[in-house]
Image 1 (cartoon, rainbow, N blue to C red):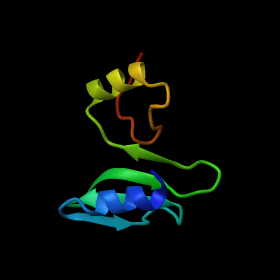
Image 2 (spheres, one colour):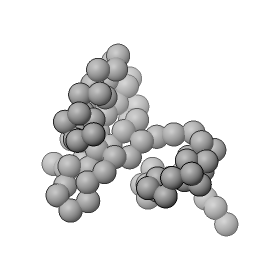
Image 3 (cartoon, rainbow, N blue to C red):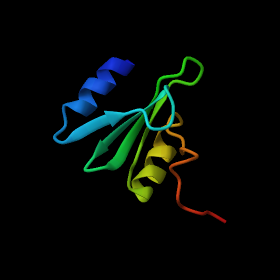
Image 4 (tube, rainbow, N blue to C red):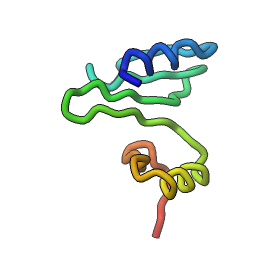
Length: 79
């Protein structure tokens, strides 16, 4: 999917809004003022960050090397 397809997919969900609250390249999608996705529009590091159940995220990282933790979204402290 390209950025526009991802944007259209997210906006097709009920109650979704989009904004650029951080900068001109971090497109944020929210439902009821709760962020669920951040689409990086910058030329040098394109990607999407999605909120996910922490246990499911661990499973997905084990199965798919492309799935990596998002630095600013991670609220779990691992020792």
